Every structure is written in structure tokens, then in C-alpha cells.
Image 1: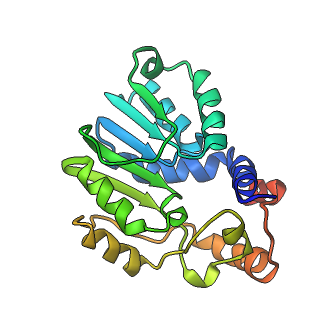
Image 2: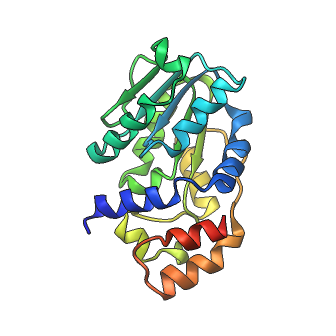
Length: 214
């Protein structure tokens, strides 16, 4: 499979892990502002949860979603067309099939979930995020951790790297951010990932095992 096909298959295999994504969403939701941008939305796994949150009583003034990969963008658009959200009806949800760049638009919150590791010049992306935020805005970043867990699967889906917490914090501070909260997550997943993907050299995600873990 091509790198794009591997990435798409992996995102689809992980898409309906309700417990995992609910946990992640609840961790980051306290930091949401009214105008949000999600960078690298993929097939919309996190986007639909943002829309659900808006509908269920945590309103947003605007949500802008960026996805540069054409194949993933088609999945994203099709999915959001059935979201039935007033964000869509009132034109407050915008999707862009392109690379995120600084623009006159300013956001209260920028979200990057499992995206930064796909970008060769991650520092440039962090700087762009800083300039696209209002003063005091929030940048939410979630990345794969621990370089010694870099695996055949990471390579297959286009990861340039995995991060140590101090390394990521340093990149953010160099990009003029103040780090408010930083933590490792999903520590229970370390051993399964190591044995399946580092030792076992798996290049795809087994949906059955993923759901069992969830």
C-alpha cells in the first residue's frame, strides 16, 4: 500500500474507538475557545466530536477545519455533510483542502491531534499556529510519544518522528508559547505498541485488537 493508503486505513480502523476518543476529548475540552481551527483533520474523527459538543451545549462561534490530503479531505467532506449541525447550516463550519497558513483570520483555539509528527518542519508549523491565534489563545497539541517506540507502522503512515515531552515543550517555547499543561497519555498502550509494531513490525492496525484495547 502507498503511504496515503496506509494512513487512511489506520484512521478508519481507529475511527470508532469511542472510549479512547471520549477520554481524549474530555482532556482537551476545558481549553476550547469560541473560534476554533482544527489542523490536519484527517477523516474527521475529532471533528465530529467537536460538532457533537457544539450541539450538546458547548457552542462555538466558528469552526474551521484544514486537511491538505485530497483523499482524506473527501472522507472528511462526505462525513460532515451528514452532521446536521447548525454550524453547517449557518455557515460557521468551513473546510479547506489545503495547508494551514497564517492569515488575517485569528482563532481562540487551534487543535492538532496526531498531526505535527507528519510535518517535516514542525517548528515552522508551530510558529504559524502562534501567529494565527488571538493574544492569549490556546494551542492544543497531541502527538505520538517516545522515540524508542518509533516503528514500522510509524514509517508506513508517514511519521517523521515521535516526541519526548521535554523536546516538544522546548519546540513550543521556541515558538513563543507558554506551556500550561503537558503530560504523557495512554501509558497502558506502550507495551502493546512495542510488541506489535516495534518488535513485530506490523505496518497496519488490527481493528479487532484496537477495539479490544478500547
